[in-house]
Length: 152
Image (cartoon, rainbow, N blue to C red; front, side):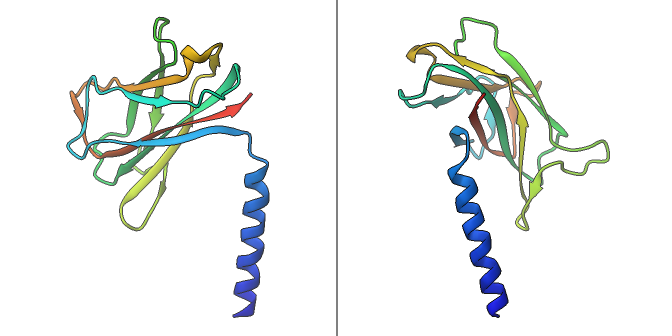
C-alpha cells in the first residue's frame, strides 16, 4: 500500500514539474451542440490580449464518441480571415477502423494533430476561427473541438 502511495506522490511531483516548464500559451476546448456541428457553425477561440506577437505552433484537438461515423474530419482554421484559411485533415481512425485517439471506458475519444503555424501581429489577430468542411451539413458525435498554441 505504501508503495502505491509513494508512486502516486512521485507521479504527481513529476506532473507538476513538467507542467511548470510548458511552452503552451493557450489551450481551450469548446463544446459542440448535441444535435451536431452544423455547416457554417464557426467556433471562435478568443485569446487574451496579453498574447505576444509572433509565430505559434497550433494543435487542433477533437473529442468524439464511439458512434462517430467517419474515419476523419476536415476543418478550416484562420486568424485573420481576410487571408485564405488553412485546411487541416484530422485522421481519427486507421484503415481498419481502429481509433487513432486516446479512448475512455465510457466510449469517448480524444485526438490531437498538428495544425498550421499561426502568426499574431496585433490584437486584431486575437481570435481563432475553426469550422468543419465535411460534405454533410451536420456532423454528429463530435463533442468538443479545441486549440492549443505553443511558442515556436
